[in-house]
Image (cartoon, rainbow, N blue to C red):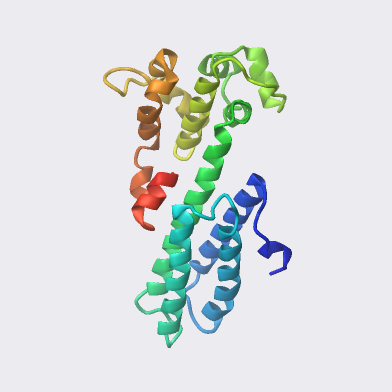
Length: 239
């Protein structure tokens, strides 16, 4: 691992890239059974990368960082205790799986933070729903088809109209695309789900007032998946 990679990430893109790389490294260790000399070999670079991420100002005092650091130390303990290197009770794999949950929660939070910026949110929705007719996306964002076409090309100026609506729609689309097609996402907005009302109706009424309820609805069963991982409070707060 190069010295440059051990420097704390300084930008949002670097943070997301580093977290994604770490998640990939951890997932890779879950592929084959942990055996032989591999665990000590991967632990050093993994610990160094986690410490680098933890030194970033964005994560330095975050609950997820604390959770990740504790899991790294637990991983060291489990590796030391596994004299045979075969992980017969899957204790090493359990820690790695918990680390993967925390790292994926970090990536999600970074993505969500970016979607709080209306310009980024508008571009995200337009491009993520590229298979949906321009007019339908425009109606969802309460803008014109011409503007959506511009967003899809990456041409987004400062958004002054309905920034709260645009960011909420982006957060919802981001959540839903994990389990739906673009067309399914569009149908979700017009399904009667909350006291007989559709998400689109609630957004039309007041996106700020209904934000929490709609995001919780969009997340649906994903929280149940998260609960198979690290300390739940930290993950749930970041999700």
